[in-house]
Structure formats: structure tokens, C-alpha cells
Length: 173
Image (cartoon, rainbow, N blue to C red):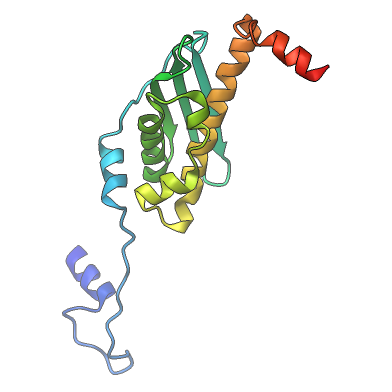
């Protein structure tokens, strides 16, 4: 039955009725790029850190239109300012999961300022995302920015910026 239905949908192997056009009806299947499939089937850095850890920044973002929710966390070395580890949890489609996975790989080992230059277009290009899935790469970019912002807010709150505070005050005066 399934084989018969598939052949009928594709217009294959069944004689055409006189009322049908001679061109076969083909359904175009939307296929993911192999990198998306790889990151979906074998996601890197899935998990979470303790959000109360002062060296951890957490970015939680979502896209109400499609229901994707992404939590990306970074662990930062306070001395060097480098991101030493990253992880994510994503509820969403394959493109959202792949974008999260790629984002965690790209931020590891980089300075905080450097990861803020990662753009959604770079993630989308790397994964060969179609236009209808660009919002997934946008979520990844937003999650990186939110995680950095959270880390910096924690750091400012804990007084770790005490050596830069006098410089900021004199610049604002």
C-alpha cells in the first residue's frame, strides 16, 4: 500500500490517465546538509553547568514563532578571559540543535571579545542552512551574546571588575 501510494505521488510506474499531464509529478524532499545531520546525530557539548558558578555565563533565548528554545553556557577563566568550556541544551529542530552545537565548538578557547564577533551568517553558511532556517543561526548568535552578557553581569556584581572601575569613573567624569 505504501509503495503504491509513493509511486502514485511521484507519478512513477503507473500508467498515466488521459486527463493527467505527461510530465511526472515530483515531490522535492528537503534534505539537510551533512554538517547539520552530523551535529544533530552527534551533538557536541550537550549538558549544563551550575548557573550560580561565578565563572559561568548563561544565555537563554527562544523563538516564539517556531518554538525553538536554546540555552548556551560558557565557562570562563577569570585570569585570561578565555572561554575554557561551553555547553548547550536546545529544544527545537535539527537546524537549531546543529547551530547550538557549532556555536559551542566555535567559542571554546576564544577571548570574550572574539566570540562576540561570531555572526549568525557564518553559522548558517557553515551549516548550509536554507533561508527558512536562518532563525536557528540567529538564536545561536543571540545565545552567545546573552551568555557573555550574563557572565559580565555576574563579574561586575561580584566586584571582579574593581580594577577597571576607577578607569571607568574617570572616563565618565
